[in-house]
Amino acid sequence: MSSTRAATLQDVADLCGISRGTASRALAGTGRVSAETRRRVLEAAQTLSYSTNSGARNLRQARAGSIGLWLPRGMNFMEYYMNFAVGVVQSTEDRELTVSLIPAEFPASKARTLHVDGFVMTDVIGDDELARAILESGRPVVTSELVPPGMPEPTVALAGDHRTAMDRLLDRLRASGATSIAVVRPMIDQMWARLAADAAADWADATGITVRFIDLHGVPSAEELHTMIRSLHDAHPDV
Image (cartoon, rainbow, N blue to C red; front, side):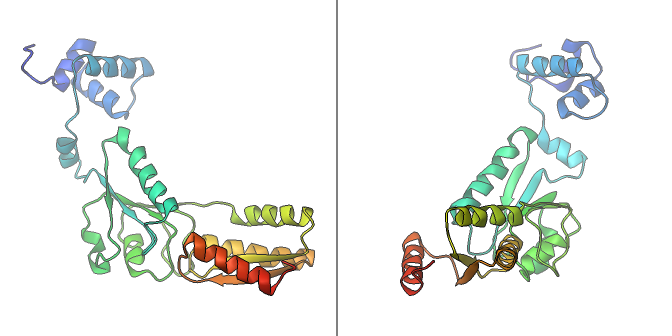
């Protein structure tokens, strides 16, 4: 093989003594290919500096080779969501996928035209029209957290156990001697916020310990949050 010619899939197959189809399945991680054959094919591809033509493969399979990422409007600057976005990108590195961040201002009516194979969404907000359109797009959608009632269901939802988490937090305060507790409650229609607040209310009913809810509007800075807590403690020193 000439050193000036890029290695082909056939070259990889010939080096391993297998068919081109078997080499293709081994590289793609699909079909019935033994672990040993896959190892040999990957080693051969590395030896020959062979790289798959993901563009051609996507064209053959009518795929975009990209997933869409939706983040809640007005919150993508928060550290949690920035880390979430980076995590999604990192998870696609070995899958030859790109990640397309869906702008919050993208028209909901054009959601079906987005050139992606599926979507990842985090903390879906109730009644967000773009989020609704994505969930109704007919493509696979994976969400972190459940979606609020009235929103279309995703293909898969990965949700934290916020009720148990809240119970443990409040139990820890009670064990420390707290008899009056305040819960800062974000006023946003996301399921994690709903579930956590409901769990706190149920815990208060079950234990008889006073729980005050402080409504949090918008996304305050750290200093604004500290000021709110200081004001709360001045008004209710028993908290």
